Length: 157
Image (cartoon, rainbow, N blue to C red):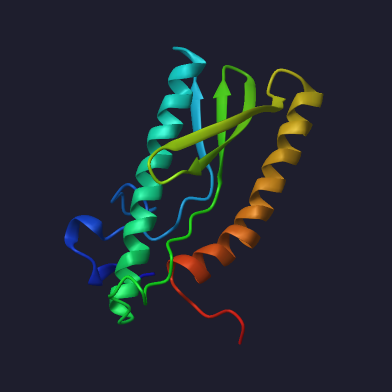
């Protein structure tokens, strides 16, 4: 990633939707929005906007990787692949899991699964379990997708 991003135009030298240096080389696996004021709907809108920007960036990055690899014609280029992203929304002490799916012409945010809360010991253990599951997915399925689909690495060897 550190070798490939400098080949991008200056404004696109990030894998995320931001050029903030601590995260620009690290693909975002899970977005988290916290709301202590405002509505839950505002949180969902923010998560959808981040997801939309992220999907647009990963799509653009994949197309750049194809051009670098010499796959410039539509028939040769590998189809753009997206992944459904988990989203966490914390409204006060309640935590919910949603998912963002790239439908090419729009982003669909689906589900709302309660994954715990910080108001009770039982709720905190539920939240800890959910966070551990998301961490496992991030270092497994998501990391493999990044290598195969974003970096266009052949993982079969």
